[in-house]
Amino acid sequence: MIVLFDFDGVIADTESQYTMFWNRMGNDYLGLDNLGIISKGQTLKLIFEKYFDGMTREQEEIVPLLDEFERNMSYDYIPGALEFMQSLKKAGIRSAIVTSSNDVKMANAYKAHPELKELVDVILTSEHFSKSKPDPECFIKAMEVLGAKPEETIVFEDSFHGIAAGRASGAKVVGLATTNKSEAIAPLCDMVIDDFTYLSLNDLM
Image (cartoon, rainbow, N blue to C red; front, side, top):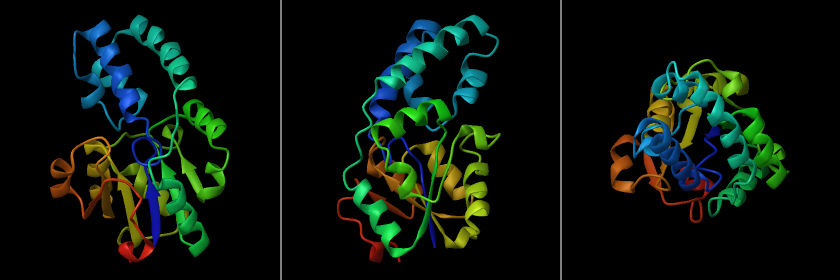
């Protein structure tokens, strides 16, 4: 068995912060109130392609705003996430972080939590794959890197795009009700949890 974690909204409690940022960008540049919701789980490249196509000046303005925002974000762990990842490591279960975030953003996360790189076997960022969630490419690549089959894989996700990518990869999906309500994601997942506080390895087995 291997375990693949999304980062934002799964390991780090950052999704509400991103919602505020992208809602503001949507309001300022597109007249949209809910960009932070509809773009969740997608790479910056896809957000630009999908919502800011041809808006070169606007994209150039948003990038440094996002970089500054991410430098000043808080990266608090989702309750129980650190302890659960430590338990996987202790049990010899291989794991990976598979995130739509880029290397620049993740460098900020490593500053806040230097132990992150030691908690998992590999970290895949948006630079490691060409397609964005809900495409399953990122999870399939992580399986290849860790040498596991889909039926041996458990994916932890919070966003609709991420959950869809996990399902499309053939893995079992545990949904976290940190970004969307549990009743909204439950039909799409094999299991739903509020956080990792009461999750044990036996639950996964």
